[in-house]
Length: 417
Image 1: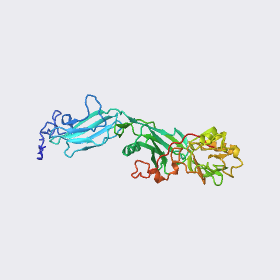
Image 2: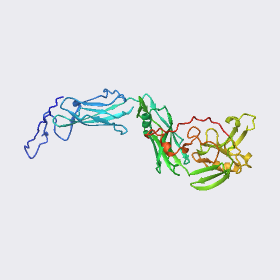
Image 3: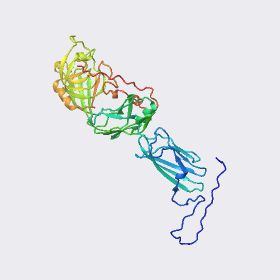
Image 4: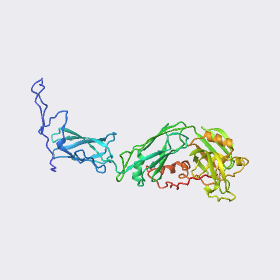
């Protein structure tokens, strides 16, 4: 290209009369383009990399717009898809080429507006549209739990249809997952494994909160030839703050609603060798009747520890079979000693009351047991046992994720007594 500065033609107009007839045209530059406020059609001055004739563009390839000839240059480009998302790009200093720097959305329709300037400074414009091909592999998200009303401890889950291992790709996914709460809360996603994330607030959800969860992934480039697909949003509401604390040392459970004690119940927890797990658990569900057998937790049939019992008012807190339930056979030990095989047992009347009072998502915490601490993942929702700073390390958006807790293997569904 000639580095000699271009000399622009000085254009002037001569006023011939005070009144100008309707047929009189505005002044023109040397190229014949009118120097008016209305830009000329710049179709002949620019070329596009997008295919013509209705063919669709590959979203993996950048969009390029180039100025033709030495006397034309591009001054501005805006590219917007049908949802209003702008495509980022860079214009060279000489105005001869614009190239997209952001990823094109798959299966989208774009409208591109290009502003130009000719050698005389006359403005031109050109608008064109094109479509991108749909994604061959689509990453979708299934949110959990099901829509409904839950307790203050209920985490949000996001199950991905395909594994995502790359940290940059995980960041793309996480940015697209939106959790909105009224009232607002501080919260974070945590990658459990390559296909599952959990979201929890720093503290429990506020009682009465309204929560909406969505994924803005549709058409978004996640990784190499992998794009997001459409995902169904989720809405939840939060009930009262119900917290039940079972003290294995005192053999009593204290139940609070919104901070106020509403019941104190004599209980029995796991005896030596079968100690109840310490820590915070979340109610997973309620089963009016469960058949509990010792063989399901590895106790040999016919041994001194063997059992096969009908159990009523069973509130599940782990997938491996820990419940809060009616245990009429141990009423004499409730409030006195720990004699169960890991569950929290109480009288039938108290178990019925507890069963009717709690809902999924409510908090059940065990303290002063000789058992291990509840697993963070894999055996229910032990999310709240991880300190907040460590929880945040499981986010792909946090720079230092070195101390991220590894997920545990999902436990088999088996009841214990």
